[in-house]
Amino acid sequence: MQTHKAKRVEITIEKVMETRLTDALTRAGVTGWSILPVRGGSGRSGAWSREGQISRGTGMVQVVCIVRPERLDPLLEAAFAVVERHIGVVCITDCEVLRAERF
Amino acid sequence: MLQLAVYNLLSPIVLSFVLGLGASLARSDLSIPEAAAKAMSIYLLFAIGFKGGVAVADHGLEARLVATVLAGVVLSFALPLLAFALLRGMSRLSVVDAAAVAGHYGSISIVTFVAGTSVLESAGLTSEGYLVAVAAAMEAPAILSALWLIARGGGVRQMDGDLWREILLNGSIVLLLGAFAIGAITGSEGLARVEAFLVSPFQGVLCLFLLDMGLIAGRGLREGARVLDRGAVLFGVLMPVLGASAGAMAALPLGLSTGGTMLLMTLSASASYIAVPAAMRVAVPEANPSVYLTLSLAITFPFNLTLGLPLYLAAAQWLTTG
Image 1 (cartoon, rainbow over the protein chains, first blue to last red):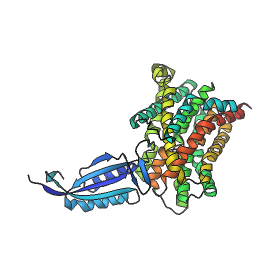
Image 2: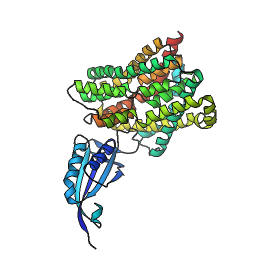
Image 3: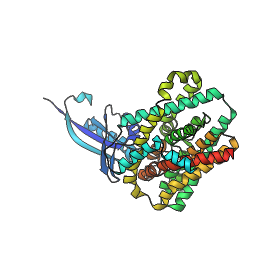
Image 4: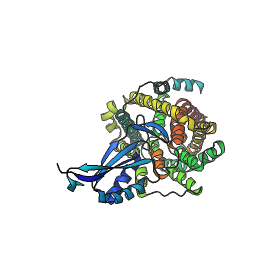
């Protein structure tokens, strides 16, 4: 089956920054993404869990975008402007998709 | 006073909190599902807002309402300045961390307020219903004070439009004021229709919610205590008493009832752990959330719930009835 090269970008970011990030992605011309809740994890600030997070200021989400390679740079610039001062991880991997016109 | 403290300590809501705290410290796997906790907080906010609105409908609007709301706003602006000065003198927190913590102590904890109304009811006292509106008005000004303290210390911070909207229209404020408006419009007749849902189960739901709060506070103590020095922990129990004193000084000239005085003291003594942490994460990501969340949730909230509330009630009774 014919496949097409694409880039998968996973941005793990604080929940309070979710809307700011998706707004920035929209402005950068990214047309689709998925948002996943993060149940817990561990990082430079130590381990944390979503369980018992009463404050809206805590907790993380992961925003996953798949874009054509030529759209990667505008996406990363938009994402970096949002995550620069905040806790978060941006990860890029190569992937292949079946329907290139959707990305 | 001692009798009042013992009565409060042995109340179902405090014992539920203690159960959660103990279970968490003992590393039990007891937990309240996130969605259930969210539903309970919506219920409590709606019930307390509705009942406050009904009280205003029953007694009518009075000029004191506007004056009390204004007093609450002034307290919310001013208390962070006191908290910041104390923290800088008592602890080794940086300017940014101290300012972020200070913002929490100017804002309010609505759960402490709800527990305060429960203590009042147990003592057979009532309060001015519009204290609910005062609670909503006190949520945001402290955030501005905290940001001003940071800007003054050299760390320039800007508030974007989205942050303003999130602060002023956060779900808790909208629900509290919305339920207050519904209660004020429909009055006692409206309350009679929903009484079986909003009044009778209230204490039971509050018990379960405080069980969850105990679990959260226990986790905060376990994981966050190491980030606090002795001065910061002392601040966590001293600041609520000073805040309550400021609240009392504002309540007396306003001529609030004993219940109203106690609740304004409670609002001034409590520290936010919902609205302000979210604002601080967006505006001041350099501030350490473990510091401000541990102080407000694991130190000040338990202090207010167990010892603070009876202390504020006794002080309010002494101040208003002599």
